[in-house]
Length: 398
Image (cartoon, rainbow, N blue to C red; front, side):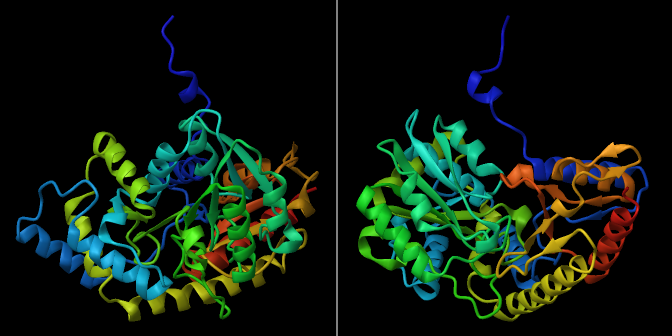
């Protein structure tokens, strides 16, 4: 009997997209759904970026580009790295892909051999372990403690390094918990990576979304040796409200980027040409629009945490980056909803969605049972209504 490959059979679907799909199905049925599930800004793409896309179409810039991206965009990305991160890259050390997710997958594809181990701090973005398995690697989780604000401890990384360790995936600011790794922690991690000789993939897609005077630091900026072992991944989706435009990029050692370009040439070719020209415009300005979005997210995170913490049985620590908060639901585990026992955060999320039409993502998807992830990339009105419904749901539990 013909079957799909063993590698494909072990891949779990994205829990965030699954929750989002169920929420959209309920909306299609006419239900008023408050969605805290999907991780994308609710703002429109700024006008100056949309206008650049229109110009690109009018000027006929609709054909294939070089696989690694247009030279003009890669030069603009190089300028961004130097200005924002103190990182000097030649355009040849940069590749543009169809989203940061593709950049990470392509990097793993050219770094990891069958059986190689990839260290992943937990809780983690849902796609990291699945991408590792897709390339034949073995995910090795590094637990992060709630009492530490889910910031990874360098000694926990060192404890899990083996002769098979090939890559560490870092994500700061973090999805799903919003933590921002301080410079001192990153310096210790960099020293371990250099000493033990493994690569780092640094996912910095939420770089611009930091609060409380926190500083975003790229691990690659902490010395030439760690830079030579690091692929820095970023993109336009989160900072510029361009999720659907699908533009991500990566920078790193020349041999790695060349290998990524060769891989991408067969897997996907170039990223969307029009979106590339729009991203070039995005990186050329828009500081006021970006600052406005950050201010709005800042107010929303404070609001959602204060409202959640007023609900008996629920709790949320204030995150310092991105637009997510991990809500602690352990205080309601063991209770019942219409006869169904809430024995996990997955059960909490399922019953909350079906009962009150509020979509959250269960912590099991991120390797953190007992919590759910809320995205506050929604209006203040929806935050208030969504938490009101959660409070109503919790109050009805027995």
